Image (cartoon, rainbow, N blue to C red; front, side, top):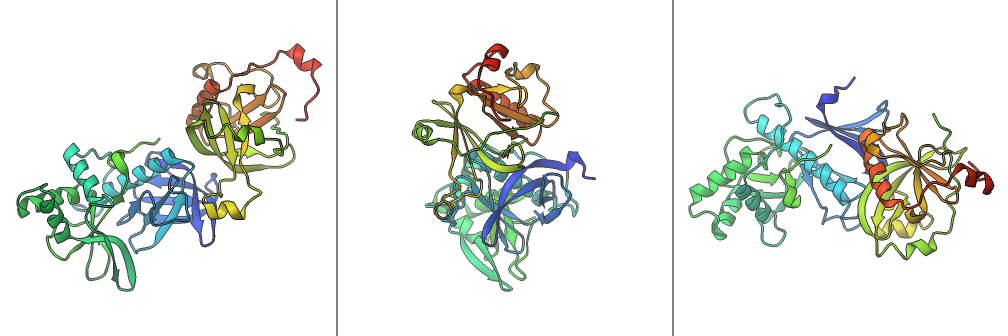
Length: 390
């Protein structure tokens, strides 16, 4: 049984498998990233060691994917794994967390073969600024691909190139100062050494101002590069084949306030399916779609998987799928056992969503309560209205 204390972050991510995306339950530990077939963790699909790995975000070299949602993980042996989150904030959360874990492993392995306890890295402001400038796509240090023993290692650079860059931009005045600054980046785990002889990637105690190859542990993570943040009813739902065309016109005006992957009840007799949720404000809308529509190419091929929209101006949150009573303040509510969220319209239609844990349940309920503007109808009015299929 896994120790919960060793879990840094968990959640659903899309993983690219040869020709298609697959939903996977991912658990980030202090030394590795585990990929499970389902959330129950009964089937372990893959274990990805993070020693010597590198995270790249965003993926500018992958034109076929959604840049705002995708990030890449390069393993120690040069293999590139492509992942996709539900939105920009969630993508950055995963990339920052994985990058922090890699830096933790890198720094701990400089003095010991066993990893130290996971910690948050807070570099000084000047180090963060230098790191951001080094990774600038236009003016940063030049990164190229190198082949070692038949394995291609991308986004690498020489130690001498870093020192030349620091001198050219007057960040340091002497070559020795540049080596000291690069040594600080290496010690903090922001740089990794790529061994010239065998291509292996790992930690080194001394930065070398020569032909030695290095690469970033976290590439292009923006201003938050050094941060880590994480963190018994019968269900029913009517068919989703409704008229949503009128609502689509409002999407361009709506501001995105939350995105994520949730399970949605398909119908009374059918099971659950994964959907990508987008909550918008001004006007309040809930948009959900097939999570595998990640690129323009996919959208052309999968014309049936169009987005659905729920006008939250005419909806409220219900206690259960059959309830006509709205939820009270979330601060006074305990999360339900099955962690389900029920969005009911004034006409009686109910959509059921399921969250991964109590924290996510509180987040969605709190956000939806601020967006839903309708009030639950009274029992008397419910009896007089037409019955709705549950």
